[in-house]
Length: 88
Image 1 (tube, helix red, strand yellow):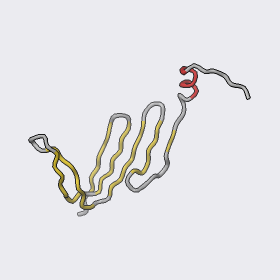
Image 2 (spheres, helix red, strand yellow; image 1 turned 180 degrees about the vertical axis):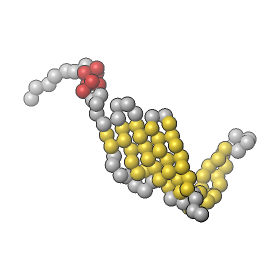
Image 3 (cartoon, rainbow, N blue to C red; image 1 turned 90 degrees about the vertical axis):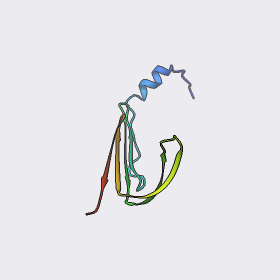
Image 4 (cartoon, rainbow, N blue to C red; image 1 turned 60 degrees about the vertical axis):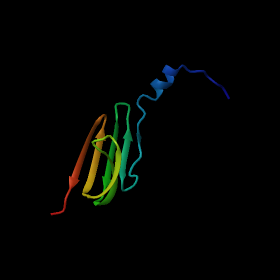
């Protein structure tokens, strides 16, 4: 076996084009992809009654339970988009 010492710049250059993609994960996080340029996420939450936390006007955290529509979240780099669907 032969060992060779590498500089951190050499290692970084070797993995610069490295990409990962989880494929389809669960019903909530459908897909996550990591690339040198950015990351992507796609998430789906079916309609239902959910417990969420909100910040009150006084700055305290409150827990509330409310019905929420189907939610789809897509994120790319630092931009995120949220769609909500209601049945008519």
